[in-house]
Amino acid sequence: MGESITDGTLATFLKKPGDRVEADEPIAQIETDKVTMDVASPEAGIIEKFVASEGGIVTPGVKVAIISKSAAQSKTHTQSSEDTSQKHSTTPPSTKENKVEAKPPKVESSTTHESKLTSSSEPQLPPKERERRVPMPRLRKRITNRLKDSQNTFAMLTTFNEVDMTNLMKLRSDYKDQFVEKHGVKLGLMSCFVKAAVSALQNEPIVNAVIDGDDIIYREYIDISVAIGTSKGLVVPVIRDIDAMNFADIEKGINNLAKKATEGALSINDMAGGTFTISNGGVYGSLISTPIINSPQSSILGMHSIVQRLVVVNGSVLARPMMYLALMYDHRLIDGREAVLFLRRIKDVVEDPRRLLLDI
Image 1: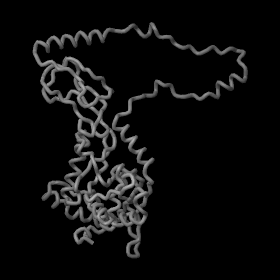
Image 2 (image 1 turned 120 degrees about the horizontal axis):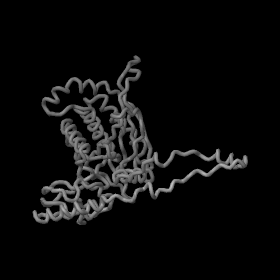
Image 3 (image 1 turned 90 degrees about the vertical axis):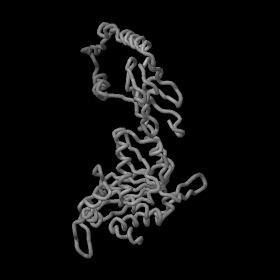
Image 4 (image 1 turned 180 degrees about the horizontal axis):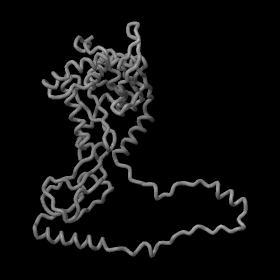
């Protein structure tokens, strides 16, 4: 399960007793705090029985199933599983015979005015049969705990700015076909924001740092976490040493992580570390928000939807594609000056990407 994982929740069995499995074929899935992993059969054979239960906590090395390898045993255990299933399928006594229906109390004609008033004032709640209670998935529990810990730990403050996307969108439109032809990947907006964030982190290294007890740790490397929404919850896989990548490398890295996240194939290594996070709520139509810091980092950049708004450009009122940016940061470590300068650097680079080429 990986050195950093101490236990997991056995989410579901993909097979049942009596089924034949091949070597390395998944038979169950385990949810950890970060990812969902398959449990593969080490041998080909017939599943004799499961010795762990769905929803139970399992640790590295614990047995979850017994598999019979011999053909003779296969028949025996298959028959055994059939007998067992027949026993378990024995029809229980009719619930109708044992069911005791609660009849409403008879209302006597002599009921007082006071009792009637009390009855009518009681809240009429929907019946419990219309509610559905399910166990919270382990990943959601982890997200819940981490977000609450983040709120309790950091002195969070947010600074905002807005960016004119005109030049970046024109750059993308002018070179998107040539970019795909040469690099085999589409040129998105995300890679430019990542490059802008790298430049801003280099200008304001305190934003890339973190508090550890009574010390401040300055990271001399830049690993950016990219927030990706999945059906099971939000994950933030990491692109490492991103300051050494070009636009194509960044786009390929993001696409690869997004694909793995969608398929549930992210590894522990994909999720570990990270010095700064970028979250793009704009893909869901968010106009503005205040993202929560991804502990143990010290800041997070929130991107949002691009909306045509009237702005003043060189004395003229023009409709421009605008995006709000939000930087949530730990005010214990980062002062307002550094946070504003950091966000302003991102704004400057996105509005004029030529700054990256000239390093100005």
